[in-house]
Amino acid sequence: MADTFTGVFPVHNNVFEVETAENTWSAIANLEGFNVNFDGTVEEWTAMENEGWTSALKTGMKWTLTLKGKRTVGDAGNDFIAGKKFKTGQDAYAKIRWTMPTGTQIVQEVVVNVKADGTGDTTNVGALEADLQSNGKPTVTEPSGG
Image 1 (tube, rainbow, N blue to C red):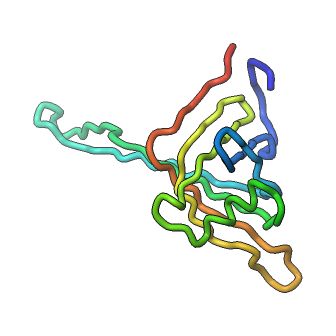
Image 2 (cartoon, rainbow, N blue to C red):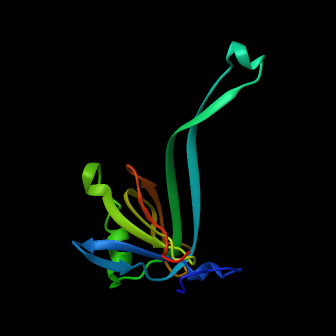
């Protein structure tokens, strides 16, 4: 990716990887789409000196990345996500890396909640769907020269 990015881009230019072993990153094969829900915690108050107008401050943040694709047995990233389906507690944690088309990179510990693993109609290719919910503060790295 160039140092400076401008213009439109296809969604497939996003790259999602999971840390399958220490310092070993694997892309998740056969992803068809994703959705991100950013959810800020905003506290509001109405001080007397504001004459009825409300003040607000964002005091917290979380985000959830929903991945949808096809179950691909034998792919390290796909197998890793699918392998979290019966995990609870800290065993359900994973570390992901999202590289955006702009070059911005987000590394985040997440809780993996597998929603579908190999499901569908008899003539479908088996699905893999998961919600990856943030756990703590992400590391966001902006591209140099931007």
